[in-house]
Length: 483
Ligand SMILES: Cc1cc2nc3c(=O)[nH]c(=O)nc-3n(C[C@H](O)[C@H](O)[C@H](O)COP(=O)(O)OP(=O)(O)OC[C@H]3O[C@@H](n4cnc5c(N)ncnc54)[C@H](O)[C@@H]3O)c2cc1C
Ligand code: FES
Ligand code: FES
Image 1 (cartoon, rainbow, N blue to C red):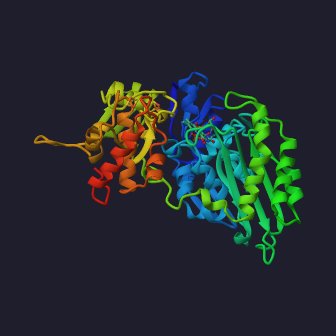
Image 2 (image 1 turned 90 degrees about the vertical axis):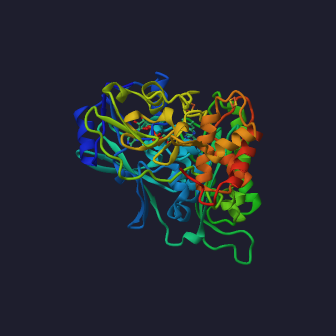
Image 3 (image 1 turned 45 degrees about the horizontal axis):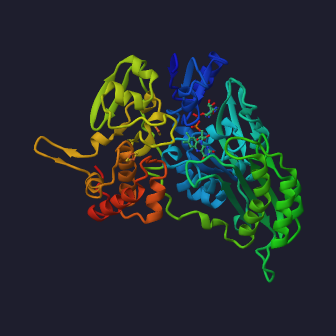
């Protein structure tokens, strides 16, 4: 897929490589856009710069009155971050609605902003939160508001020698007077591109007091899917300021946003549909904020399928020397393996064909494996990104010894519950389900459905699959019985 694969270990090395190969390189972060495009031949790159060894870009921290999110922070990390819940709730809500668990473990916020989709779910909350991006090159650093950084669909002000390093969100002295909400409308509840998405961030002068409606002091409303780029609805925000957030005012603001919309027409929805739903959606968001129900959509315990952050100790690959630790065995791979995804490498080079190839674009979950304990889509991991990582495939889930083979409780439950029809989705389902049980030994129905939301079964055997997970949960000890 690429001719040269570079894996810098410091920011200075990264920006000097960007300058050295000016205009010829593609930056690879989580790969959930780029690796899809490359496998579909809609993107090419002679040289790839893989950011996966830049662990300093995975940090979430508070500094000098700002919340700072490294460019490689994933939705799964945001979902587990107390700092984000306190200071950037709409972003956490967006991450909760983002793709499915395997995608949330790999996608990055930096990639989302740079990809600049008109319906990227990270963008409305960041614009509503008045976030800025930090751009680094060998000649220095500059900072731009996210709203200015994105100029057109999939176009930004990023220069060819620049790296997006951080996203910076201002923190307010009175967080209890700030309320915000993200809302996404898609054609399904998971693994879906937004038809319309939006984030509202309001600061109140009081909490309502004797009056049931709080007094709005400042407002930012950002809406995606209604124009070529995410739009700030300035007139609607201005209407709210200085007024109490009554149900009537919420309706008026919704109508105003609908008036400025120039919705896009695409395969996900016609423009007329977007236009029709916009006003009511904005009004709904504002009403939820007014009545303090805006955090309700977020569960206290998120389903993330594995540790939220990859271990920092990912080793750097010596040139051309790819080493994988798969199911406890170390493999030294030939140089040709460098140009593959983890999925094709597992299947073609290691003969581990239990991991299935379905869509090769992160949508079906048939290729789910564990990468350092995280459930990921192997089709969206470049093989060198997995250098020295611990990989577990379906073949490694059972405890096999010379004397006997003991199946994982979920494998046993799949047999007992007859949870497979053609069986093509089964390895991916089991890898996602076993990871869920390792994280949450006794998941409820909603957590099971969420944990499996990145795995499709075309035989539609979902009821039995869910029954198998419930049965396995009853079989295993409370520590999850993780191999
Ligand atoms: C199955 C599936 C479901 C998805 N669902 C959603 C969804 O619900 N909501 C949503 O918003 N998106 C969704 N996406 C899209 C994708 O997950 C996001 O856009 C993601 O944030 C991209 O980040 P990444 O790290 O994977 O980017 P990559 O694919 O690695 O890169 C994307 C682009 O950004 C550039 N880039 C990345 N990082 C940097 C950096 N630090 N500095 C400069 N340039 C950089 C790359 O060169 C590339 O051009 C989905 C994707 C898939 C495959
Ligand atoms: S998600 Fe990887 S093959 Fe479908
Ligand atoms: S059992 Fe056939 S795809 Fe799931």
